[in-house]
Image (cartoon, rainbow, N blue to C red; front, top):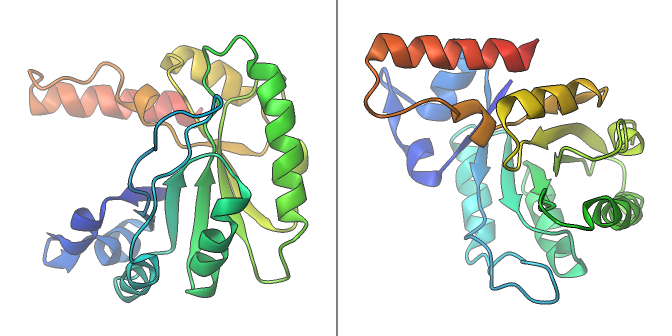
Length: 212
């Protein structure tokens, strides 16, 4: 459905076409541009994003390359609200990724607070202002159903967050309307010493299991 690209990947070519153009026109896959610059130091149990310099220029560049949206990993806080709206105004759909640590002793409580705060922010958005949410697979099945059904949400996608692929798939199946956006669980079992055939077979098997 979609692929998250680094800026330098967006600028490279595949078979003579820039990556977003190739992905969409040859594969039917939409591109998302990673715009965050990593996480700041932990403070009060939270790691916010580092400042994102030249965001407007990056968004404009993404539009020129045919990118559909952006991706930034953080916790939704008021400080990020303007950046989210700036991306929307620039013509892209932001994926907002507030990851909850799967090893937290208070994971379920974190998710309760997170959902409450996300719903508050979504209700402030106006018609035509839409986002995607990338969330850690929740402890309680279908916990994010209100977000899946929200009129300002294009998609809710799940990050594996350190769960094994088997665990991730089991949890994903319990969350209706949520689709996979796995990286760690997707690449599980892949290594540099595999032959091309072994690599392709493993990746194909992984994708099939997540799809199912």
